[in-house]
Image (tube, rainbow, N blue to C red; front, side):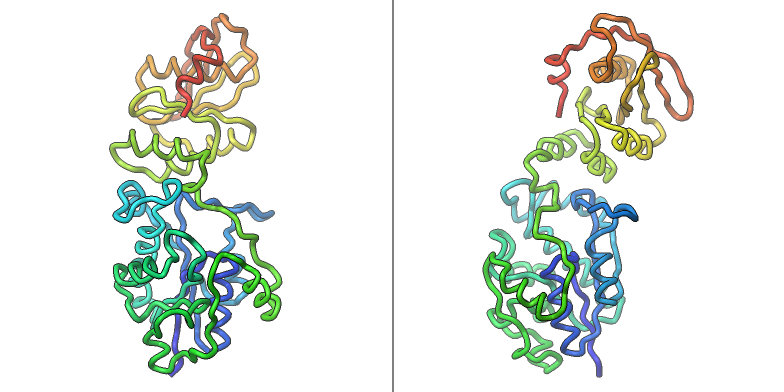
Length: 334
């Protein structure tokens, strides 16, 4: 009976190699990739296409892409096992991913799950004790195979049952990627992404913005986190923000992100970035947002300016004095 593995798949070199090891042992492989507002996509000529989509196409394996949703945001807000160097709860993330993969494993008819984890590669989630903890808490004991470090780990059910040949598994450890790169060349893997970040939860420049959303949200909304990669962010009320575009791509992204109830702002008398006010919008907060917007126009300080406000398809005009200098604006910046 031919066996099937479900691969937790990022599209990075490690996960590609893990799949290749399975394919070379005659195992059918299906991949699952999880998306969230914290995982930065990479743009191609076709648009925002993930490494996972490109790599699955090259490997000729089916790929299921699943958005993690609000449940995952709550895991990030209150992780059981704590954060890493930023707001990255790597152990909790790994447990969550594998639980979700375990649910899909039964649905897609897979016999076990594989990952591209390497023992000792990441300080928080890929220590030996952390890997045992993850396997225990995700409910996949014996069915979670890590092909790249398998010879340093206890034999799994697929190895003990003879579905996999343990001698053909790998024994990679540590943070160096020289062995992975050598194997990629040997296996004919010519294209793979460079090792890099990709998770906003580890990016110092985003941490204050992420904390701000968690601190001021009664109910978490993925859109609030997706917006963090666009524009300048200002907290003008406990439940109100204004986001102002820095360039034309930002302006277009903000226009696409507008929802019913949001307010779109532009200076009516000259060239202006897009400003989008989200959350609870009171008249005084709208005025503050307009004054912040004017800081990024060529309006003369002290001038009375007309601001176009579009909300739910209806435009009104707001008269505002341009009185916020740079120091005043910075008081609101997230």
